[in-house]
Length: 420
Image (cartoon, rainbow, N blue to C red; front, side, top):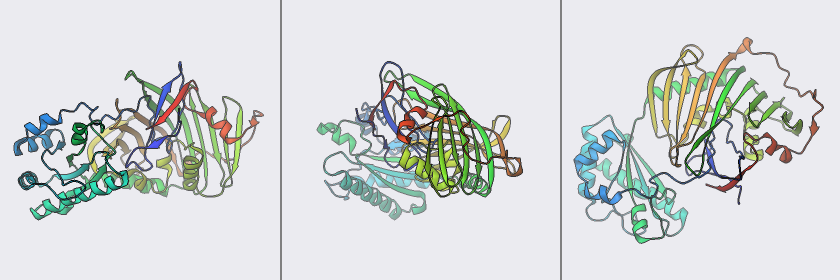
């Protein structure tokens, strides 16, 4: 079976989901930027499980149904908005439907709307992606002509990447050619709070914390299993970091002193060293892209964590206060095409992240990855560390590729399946 993982469409760096099949009772792992990752055993798209009653929504269409759907579900599959074959020209009947959409938006001026156009899998994927974007822009332009502010409309082409039915039948292809209207909230306050957190983190020359994480695995039988680990992070900008992670099947340590990267598998008493020069940001990219071994909480350690987290976000919510480990936090929620993430940011002069939860919205079972941060320290409060490796256990030196599997979060009798 292939072991090559693949990013979900539109996800950028925030998440990678791979399919894994069980061989008696073990797992193989692949994080993307450490904390922002999910693993599943069956990567079946959950957009509709190919059982959505789209025909029923066609029969029930009315302006009132559209308004009610957007008020209660935040999403509506717009029946009747059809295009000429291989073109971005709307077919007859679209004018009244667009009038209805505009009328609803004018009634609720605080709403913003995301227009997502999908195609079937006929033809070239790149062409379908471009065509779907052109069609979404066409609908946006038509709504602007009807008096809707362009700032309230977002056009997105999904191409053929998110089918709701099989493309092997004419009926399935018809269902896949659809337009989704998604009501979104674009909270300036949520973005402001997240940006404040990012700016605070980037300004810290030294920081440290302990963490507890939980990685969900969804089996082929739809059972959710949690794999828990704990660890520590000690960072000194611009180019030093020391992390540990301990779980049921892993006990690892990573050290970087600006010149040499050391990876130690304590559970197998082996280590590897790689000559590497640069900043912690460059190290994070190198570990993820070249070695597939991202650091814990890596996105939050980047000096541009706001850009890393916000790439692809179309919905931002400020949910008010919440408490994590007894600390009052601002609770913020964000949506992307394939994942939702919620983050709790400490209130006060030190807006550090207290908890982060990533949920896959397009994978059956909605697997999650979460990390909870404790013992936060910055500045003079950070424990002293020379970030140098001392081989006190006489660990055996090994090749990085040999050690990677031994540093897995999960037991090795789970077999990596096809990338999804």
